[in-house]
Every structure is written in structure tokens, then in C-alpha cells.
Length: 186
Image (cartoon, rainbow, N blue to C red; front, side, top):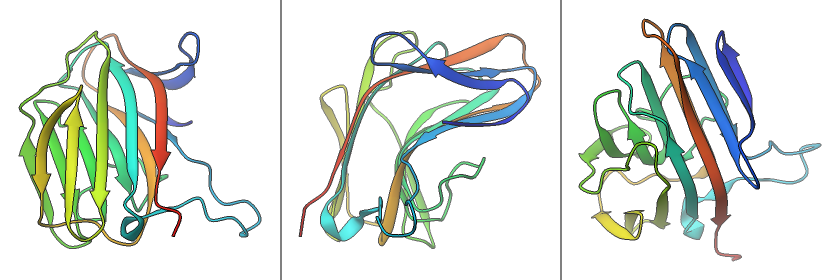
């Protein structure tokens, strides 16, 4: 996990869980993502051509207007901004709504989630990129959509990004449970 800005922090959130926190009165970002390559010899990327799958258990204390969040795959980890046109696939909280989001390196597409993650509850998101064919998003066991346009390509990393834009009061929390990420071997 990496925190940027005032009021962003992370730590243990209970048995086998992590907790990310942002202070809504301050501008801050906390990210949780896979480790970078070590000694440039092991590539920890997940490749869109190898049908990557990301399952994440999560819960947000509230759906605040001062906060945004992203859960899924993206090509540009380590930044404090939400993905837009970079290669990515996942879900996002925009500060007003939950959406499915994806982009092919040029064009972003978003779709409102029908099954909205519930605040202060355990939710599960599953992101499956079926190579160049389609993208599936599942929320708590319900398939949200099968998308066939603006699909990501290339090397991707998994990331959970939680941001505060400031101007609010109090703290918001994201509790993260089990993460499962895999792809085809060949």
C-alpha cells in the first residue's frame, strides 16, 4: 500500500484484511496494488491476452461525495488519479455513482452498475477480461455486463485506489478482504 497526501493511511483491518483510510477534509490518496518487478527479472503484470481475472472482497464505510475509488486492472499504477483512457477494466465510485469502467488506451467507456455495492457491507467484485473478445464484471455474484467495446490490451496490474478531494469532514474507510488474481499460463 502507498499513501500520498495528508490524511491518507492504511493498515491491518482485521484477520486477513487491510483497511484504507482517507480524511475527507484533506486531499489524499491511498493505493493497494501488486508489487513491482524485482531486479527487472520477474514480470508481475497480467496480460489482457491471457484472460486475467481479479476478484476482490471490499466494503466502504460510506459512499461520500468527497471520495472516489477504483478497483480492477490498469496499465498505470502508482499514480494518484483515476484511470480514464489508459488501458484498464474495473469498477469505480465517482463521488456520485458506481460505474463499470474500461478503456483501450484511447477511449474510455462507462456503464452505471445495476447491482450497486452496499455501503458498510461486504461486497465482491469480479473482473474478467476474455482477451480480445469481451469483458465481464460481476458484483456480489450478479453479472453486471458483458462488454465488447473499448477493451484493454497489453500489460495490466491490479489496483485498489481510494481518494479524497478534500472539502468534507471526518474519515472514510475501505476494508479489503481476500484478493484473487490469476491468468492463463500460456
